Length: 421
Image 1 (tube, rainbow, N blue to C red):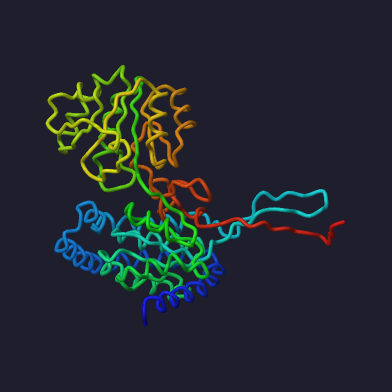
Image 2: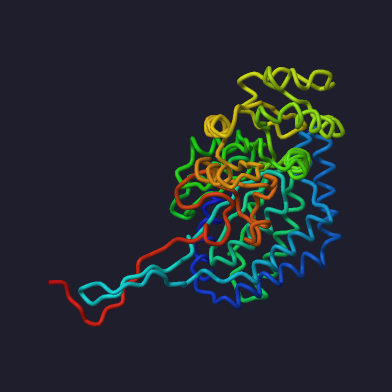
């Protein structure tokens, strides 16, 4: 069977399964999630072995370090997957919830009911944990899903797919409710994004090149983000006992994630105090600092220092490089962020309540934070159980996309025999 025929079959199976997934009650969907969690724990050694085969292949092919980091399925990552599934079980079921009921003068009652989107196609690179996170969220929200992981994670994804299929059948749900695209042929992606008759929405999770291609070619609506250019602004009224660890963690906790800080902004009044202290922390991690002229003068003598160019303000490094700029105050900080940010996650460190509220109101990003690391912009950390992706868009879903982002609202009307006159 050629790729087009194969993907058409996958699509037909997903559409048929989506109806059964939407009909399933809360207990059945939760049972499937618990069975997946138990099987992941049971087969942890097998999953690590499959992941090691992927890692060995990645090393042989010279995969970029940021991608290798995402590919690694550590014991902690497995534990997080299991915890995420169990957290999803504990979340309220959004499906069938009716809200905003109002009586109209005609006598009818009008409200809105939350319903599944239908079939969700997810395209992602590396990150085998996405396979379980995405499957879990789609099951909980009553959707069917087609998962197309990257070729670099094919061994681990196949092992996870077997676990999910086993759990769905044991729970009495259709095994085609979650399907892994079992080919590394890139033509499968082209087929997925042009099957609106079978797929209701595409969620791409990957590099800028992948998402840019999908934005150009897809005929299916998408929930997406293109870049993760995140900022931390340290205000003159910041508590340095909070500011230093926040700015260090936001950059150095992990380099290859979309919620990692890429630009540090420091108010001029405290820059001479703050920047040398932060530079000492960044030196431990050999972080290269690309500084504007004012920051460059304050950091003279730092061994990994370069002059920032305009390109640095719009670059997602995904590595140990940080752009640094001194600003005159909150007005300049907000202006810089709204100009150069990818509208993903931006944070202010301040003890000034008015500045904090201004930052929250005026920074145009999906997640805006006060006195916290940008690394918290994550579905698991937000209590969503996990996330299917992060959206920088403003329509339908924004920020980490959990259960509600995988549903829609339809109007429902209760009448008592009324007719329109």
